[in-house]
Amino acid sequence: MPTSPVALSGRSRCRQLELLAPAGGMAQLKTALRFGADAVYLACDRFGMRQRADNFTLPQVKEAVELAHGQGAKVFVTLNTLMDDDDVEALPEYLEALADARVDAFIVSDLGAFSLAQRYAPTVDLHVSTQASVANAEAARRWHDMGAVRVVCAREMSLDAIATLRAKAPATLEIEAFVHGAMCMAVSGRCLISSAMTGRSGNKGHCTQPCRWSYALVEETRPNVFYPIEEDVRGTYVMNAQDLNMLEHLDELACAGVDSIKIEGRNKRSFYVATVVHAYRQVLDGADPAQVAPELYTISHRPYGTGFYFGRPDQSPERDGYVKECLHAATVTDCRANGDGSFRIEAVCHNRFFPGAELELLSPRQSVEALRPQGVCWLPRDPETGATLPPVPVEVANRAAERYAFTSPIPAEAGDFLRSRIDP
Image (cartoon, rainbow, N blue to C red):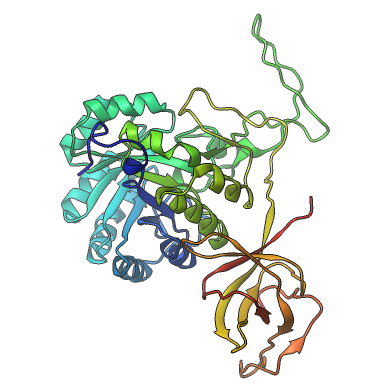
């Protein structure tokens, strides 16, 4: 049950926020849990808004739930696409299978899906998706009366509007809000552009992101209305929304009455999930947001903003594409003490790194540490048997997805990430 925002304030309240992380596949789910997520949200092969993600089969959902519950975390399954009659007919069996897997909640936007979930999976909590655009207390109260446990705020809401909703909505209704990640040009996501231009519906989970495309403008005639647009040789990106970043405002969200903070990113890989969850976990655990904030610039992102929380959001019309300060160099698979105070680390290469060149170690609930790998060796496998062959010393680790070993002055654990700085 959520606590009244007047009962607690500041950091003490901030620490009670649930950290909800995306899991586009099993690898991302394991990473999210390891780096401190309190809950994860995921989708199966149907009914989710991110059909390009790896997603989960129904048997994998059961495995995911067992893994999460074993670590004290919850699993929410998205069923928030636009539902037609064929979808509705397929839902009952789907809902029963997910209930048997013991998922904790469904994230739903369609009233028909909501009704069927109550009928075929009555033990599963119901969360109202941001796709439903809940932006006022009356709508929140109605969803609660129908059986919703939580509403995900429409992304058009300001911080003050969320506080008003919290004050007027039933005390037992939980409030969830997005805090980080890509922003749809249509904000809460009900966009028809992809469907109109490509025949692939974003509301069915197949968005082609035409709002990120470059457009060359010929002429626009709107008497007495002037909208400045600058165009370079690539065109212009007038619909390109900034990414959301609320890391430095978690106290304000908590005091407004938010119960759960949500990270966008089911199309993202594990390195992204680890970095973002790690940053938000540190702040929730009491770290200074200003000191943690630079971490979020190490991963691929568009220019950051705060969405509608403090006024109208900005676009990035000058360019599309991502910027980042680091590359994912490798993922640690094993670490053993050498007996002389150093450690032998094995890792799978993602981007090249060099002996003696500085890498940064990203590990759960710890500050990032620097290390310089020494004695880097490639660990080849026999292509027929898979057996590990003798190590081969190398001057650069540059075989993607291949295993390497090296000596490190500091330890690591399987599942940690190594990153390298990009030269400015």
